[in-house]
Amino acid sequence: MEKFYQNTTARVFLALVCCALWGSAFPCVKIGYEMFHIEGAGSQILFAGYRFFLSGVLTYAVASMLERRLITMKWSSVPYVFGQGLLQTTINYVFFYIGLAHVTGAKGSVINASNAFFAIIAAHFLMKEEKITWKKAIGCLIGFAGVIVINVVPGAWGSGFSFQGEGISLLCAITYGISSVTMKLISHRESPMTITAFQLLFGGAVLMIAGYLTGGSMYGFNARSSALFFYLVLLSTIAFTLWAELLKYNPVGKVTIFGFSIPVFGVTLSALLLGEDIFTVQNLAALVLVSIGIVVVNSAPCKMRSDNV
Image (cartoon, rainbow, N blue to C red; front, side, top):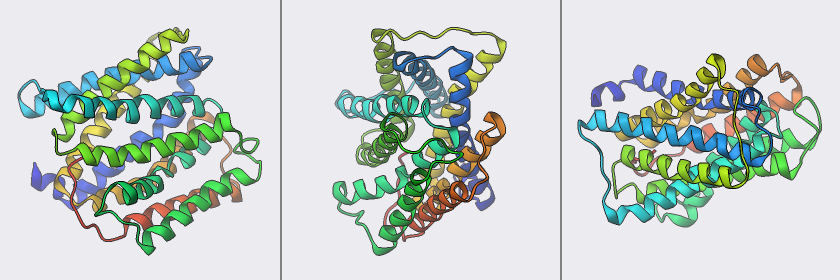
C-alpha cells in the first residue's frame, strides 16, 4: 500500500476526494437543518453529536479492519486523546454548527479555510521546529485578506459581519487550526487512525450529551434525510481515513497543499445545492485570496514528516 499512496496520480486524486468531501459538508449540513427541523443551538449540537459519534464508530471499524485486530489505546494516552476530542470535535463543531446556521454555505467554507493559517501561527508557539518564515507570513496575510474581503461589504454572501455567524465561524477556524497542532503533538502516543477514531467517539459523545442537556431535538428521518445523514457520517470517516494514510506515506506539504481546494468545493457545491449567488467580484476575490494564501503557506519547505491527521 505504501507505493500506492506515494504514487503521484493516486495522491492527487485521493487528496482531492478528501477535500471535496469536506467541502460538501457545508451545504449538506445546511440542508440537514431543514430536513431534520433543526432549530436552536441545542438541536444543532445534538445533530453534530450524532454525526461524529457514528463517524467515530465507523472509523474504529475501518481502523480495526486495516490492522486486522480490534484497536485499543494505552491508558496513559486516554487524557491526551480525550482532550483532543474535546478540542477538535466537541468545541470545534459546536462553533461550526452554530456559526454555519447564520452564514451562507459559501461564506462559511471560505472563513473556515483560514484554519490553515491559524495552524501555522499555533505551531510557531507550540512547536520549536515549526517557526513562521517570511513565506508563511506572507501566505497568512494573503489568506486573512480574503477573510476580511468577504466580510467588509454586504452582498450576496449575507448582510456583513455578526458575531453569531461570521464571528463564531472564525472561532471554529481558530480551534481547528490549534487542534491540528495538538494532534501532531500527541501523534507519537498512538497510531493516527487510533487517535482519530477515539477522539471522534469521545468528542461526539460529549456533543450528544450537551445537545440533550440543552434541550436539543432532531426528527424527520425518512429515506431522503437518512441518506443525507449517512453521507455526512460516511464523509468524515472516508476523509479522515484517506488523509491519515496519505500523511503516513508522504511529506506533509505534498498532501496539505490540496487544502486550497476545500473552499473551492464548498463554494461551488453551495451554489449548486443551495442556490446561493456566488458570482460577484467580492466573493470570487475572497476565494482566490484564501486559496492563494493556502498554496503559499504550504509551498514552504517541509522540515519534518508527520503521520498524524
